[in-house]
Image (cartoon, rainbow, N blue to C red):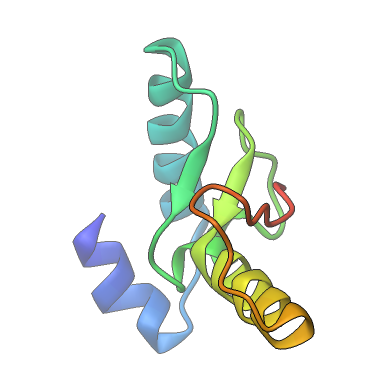
Length: 88
């Protein structure tokens, strides 16, 4: 996974092989009982733009943006677990 992120995604390279590998990993997590996957690296979401993931994906960048918007609109920091970025 690290190799794909640093050698491919950070350079704008998205291959079908990388997409298949990441979808396989998400499917394995689903088989182990995961209910969703947090994409905690901003580059990973590009792998799922044109293919379906077997679980809902939570993009960390979207979650952070939602928390910032919430703070700017309300003046209050969101409570832990309160911010819900749209799952894909």
